[in-house]
Length: 323
Image (cartoon, rainbow, N blue to C red):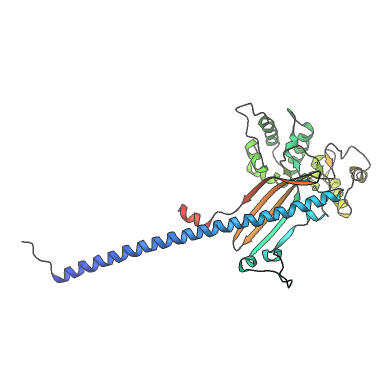
């Protein structure tokens, strides 16, 4: 016959069982609470990003009429026009409709959201698409890019590799052809290293067709690179002169350079632009959402969006999920 445990031992076992039960229930409750908090955080972050996309879509809709009205006005495109003035960061409430008393309609959310944006001329940059002329590499533009690489201190062998791979990417019949890039950052597919691409990015673009360089908006570095005989001093002279009065014709700039008509030519340069980049940025607390779009402006005038990129930091709750 098994002896009966002492009363103190029975009480100890019951107390231990009660503690284990409490610990188990507390653990289950904490896990459920954490999952609920995680779901709320993910849903809130996704809602914030969705709202930001809608707001930044409005910024793109704001930019297109500005470009269209500028085209209706005619003349050259330059950096003193309304489209080139950046939108400084301002509260979302500043853009809301005013009430009947003329006071801005505000909400707690609107006063915590800040917007900024900018329109930039993509024809102020050297177009990588110009490197390919039909079924061959354009020697003229290869020379221009070569000078740009030289001015930036970049390895010329990467330029040759990029140009050859860009030409190969145009032939889709070949199974081993490189994938055709759609954006500047995709040029890494064609052989550009990360440091080279980072140095080139402010000075180049990748547009769907060959374009001319706008001398009213291009930097001195890009202007110098586009013409073999144009040194940096004379390129800076052009930039300084257009700040006082923009160039209405290429002949005006050539006159400034000494009257020669073969420095800036209508086969490489222009005083107008068709391609623009629209950048929008929304900031709420520590969350930042950015939007980039390429807009093509045609005669008519019309402005259509060629592609749009939406960039946002990863969700904080997603980091928790990954752990």
